[in-house]
Amino acid sequence: MTRPDTTEDAGRIAAEIAGCRLCAGRFAVTATAHEPQPVVWFRPRARLLLAGQAPGARVHASGRPFTDRSGDRLREWLGLDEAAFHDRDRVAIVPMAFCFPGYDAKGADLPPPPICAETWRARVLAALPGVQLTVLIGGTAQRWHLGTRDVKATVAAWRDHAPSVFPLPHPSWRNTGWLKANPWFAAEVLPALRAEVRRVMNDRA
Image 1 (tube, one colour):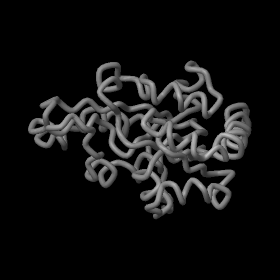
Image 2 (tube, rainbow, N blue to C red):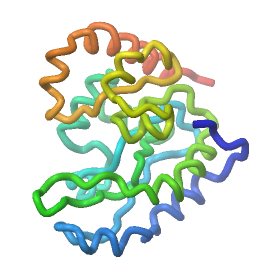
Image 3 (cartoon, rainbow, N blue to C red):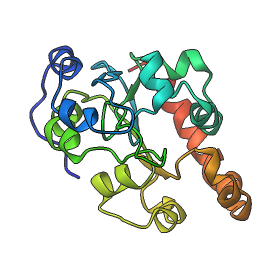
């Protein structure tokens, strides 16, 4: 998706998002019946953008993105330690929804509410003019940024988007079987991704 031409103030937008309660009614009727708690993790100088789905329950509790097993796997994929991963001056973590969506009656994660991206996403991206590398984690982010719907096909076609964009499957441990069945991901995609992450993270510009 094309980024807006205007640049907004990242600090002002972050403060607005932190106070957002657009989904309070939606969350109140989920199985978790929780309050909105946006996890806002970006600053204007960031050069690496991580675009995921939405915070999980552990992130909702900690207030820090990817403080869970998925985060451990994602950091390994990127070749980043926890300190670098959570360095907001270099890494912007902007999911498709900033709040934990909750669980349904069966205990499954609810999808990110579309209203979050509709309200905030274009403005946040406009406030991050220094982003050099965008990592799209999962189908929701890939649909918004690339217009694609088949995650496996999009990841397989990663060379069509590299080096400025890398589409990835979700790092959930539920995808372990897919990763074992597709060794090309670890053999081809991850080395290229890590090389680009190193370049961007070490860029002194």
